[in-house]
Length: 244
Image 1 (cartoon, helix red, strand yellow):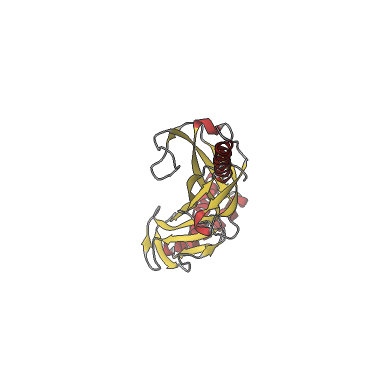
Image 2 (tube, rainbow, N blue to C red):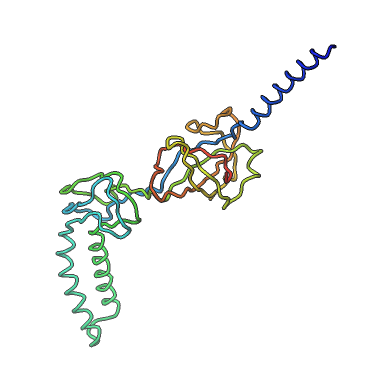
């Protein structure tokens, strides 16, 4: 082998080595993908009555304890006058010994029950959140248990990532991870693992892990910080499931 051939081989080997190193450097890490979800609640009616005020609209931000709607509760308001009078009389009679304590207890229970129903006439938000759906409108009559509105807390947002058995040991509750939102130019969001499933399952059909979908995996629940409300339910978020 002459000197020229040796030089050519060295150049070729150097090129292949450079290409191999470049591929290793540029090799992208594996990204798991999950669908974002939020805490959702459905607020139902605890009594039967008609809606007299329904000021909120879909998309409105609501604080916990804020009134969502008001029911007329005419029946309970009429009863309240009679029950309150009966209770006042019972209170006076039991003090003078002209009424038994058992009879007084009945009067007191009737008042407590009706007062509670009157409180239920003012339907209030159980959490801070956003009105997602209004199931009824002002003036409609609702029955006990009927759905009135659905709400979601956009700040409490998470996703499940499905991880193969051989990778689960690397993860732990409380571990910080970084989520990547492809639609936002790869913007990163801080997250924390809050749950690791104890039992394996097949990868859900609506989740893409970029590998064969028939393997057994473990669900990893990650809650993400969402101070600017950029993350929304239904979006896909990706992560390497580490803090990089």
